[in-house]
Image 1 (cartoon, rainbow, N blue to C red):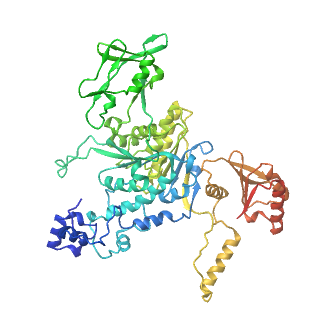
Image 2 (image 1 turned 45 degrees about the vertical axis):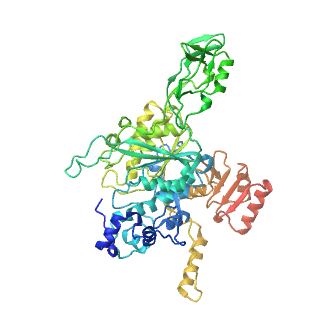
Image 3 (image 1 turned 90 degrees about the vertical axis):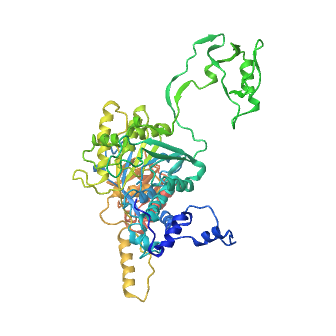
Length: 606
């Protein structure tokens, strides 16, 4: 990072010295003289605003961007997919902010996401690919924050602000998608770890911070002339937040406790009642007491206490499962008294044994030569997180999916017989590779090849994925700009819109399948819900779900006879395009026919 510089209006020897001595009052682009004067004088004015908050330039606008509805859709791409008809996995190409908006209702609630893992940009380079409205260039940033014409160096906060504006709305949407028992893991390094923690405390709740996992990502030092004698970073972090109180994780099983002894009541093992320090915050007077087996009596040594309380000790004693031997309290511990599994704790540290950034690059090369990735996570690391945080049928989301390590890890995890599903989201960022023109091509190729490898020995693992690509909505968007009736050009524009929308509600060049998937998503069906083709009058309509509860009819001739046939599938809802009806009279007759058969069927015409 370059040496600290001040904006031009502060670029005087006196102000530089002031900022050097009192950095507490520097606010990214200005010096807070009000707080400084209050500090120096000791006189704090009544109107000096005081509150605890985490804010930055653009935070309000990023919230507005979050609340702005998306006009996009997700178009199916079967030619890039694997096992389209059977898979429950998704790979979505597009800006993750728009994609998350589009799926937030579809994958919310009980069918929502159990685990999110993301490896976002660490904010170590000069440019972002994520080109949101207010942060796509330095000029726009300066204009937006009212600093046009002022040179803002990197250390003054522009890069922190830009990164925060990029992450903030995406984390809001991530929180919406998480189930109530969900957990999110976020990889980060020292550049933004402090800001990430503050931002996540706001979005997920400070009380839902579980901890930071350290990952030993490097084993080789930088030995360049400029780096060899500097402090060398060795670990990266994974911030962990959850929506559940006292979040518990799955633990690695190492074995079973043995019960080698037996009596008339069954198997048991002898457990020596342990002592612990009675001093400090864990000290309890109630844990210091005499224990007797009717023959001998034992008291804890000075400064020590029992690890079990009097009630528990009395229970074992009443069962005659407690005795004293060689001045030790022995408990007959039976299988029903404890967890019989021997487990390894979920340590907040992953050593190099789980894989490093360097080994992860080599790992990726096996599936995609010349991939160009420098910051790859090992499959085993993500697989371990998936194991600890999910159960066999859960959904795992990664909306900075990069080389698709998370998808690979989910498939690996499903070797345990599970049916976990992944949703990968990645911007189709261009690469320098002729083989893989975008990052998405690298990710999809990795899933294909890793899936083929896994399927050889585990044919029941779902190694397929449906590809969808972000695009403009299939529906024509009405321009609601006010029209001046005295302006001929504006009136002509309005009349053109009326004609444009009268022909069809859909834009040209879109297939029925494109439209069906958008309607499905708008009605909160998942993108892997089965679509059942139904032949009516020699044309195809679409039944959504295995029970065809929702039927979509696009540009097919529907009359009373067709309506009666539709009702034999017992749908709960039917959607027609207006073009399905010869005229208004036919439409009215069809609606009456359906309602006479089952008045509970909901009808809609677009």
